Image (tube, rainbow, N blue to C red):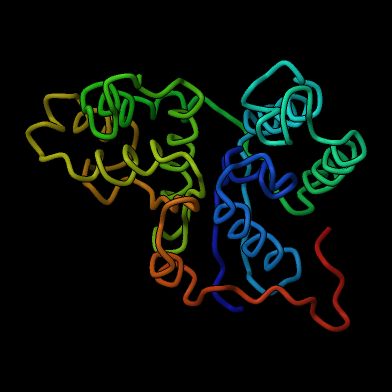
Length: 246
């Protein structure tokens, strides 16, 4: 457990940890449980960051799971019209989440700041320029998702790129941050203003290595997880004589 990992998690993987039914993809729910239980029980040495904007997203999504009986997307997850997450499970999930974010017990809240907003210049133009992952009925990414990518970009700068990853179940994150951005040629990057902005923002120079690794827990293969963590699945059993993190 000597190697330390730094992980940035978005709400698409955090919500299924507390309410597995909230995702149609059982693989994602199972994988995030293995990762966070391994961290919780000191089996994997990792600092788990959660963007503060994702804290709000998780809370509002929990509310949606419990109260939106009219929402077809919700009641389909729970058995039909009028069905939602049971009130007791909703309250338990909220309590556990609040406990896990209190004083960095399991998640360290990562605050949005001006550097992240400025770093949008390194990813936003690519998302709008490249029809990389979209079908005809899909739009470009919203500001919140792009800001999470900007946070990941800065965290990679602060920590070892080999041991930092953005964990998500949103395929757009992987498509843009880990594929479209790094695969730009230098001339295209220059025409989009990325080369100039990278220097102005203190990244020394623009290169494909600037962008963070993304692990899409819904779609990546086990080999990708082994490549990052060194093994898969991770060990999750509680350590004798050592209390879980939260």
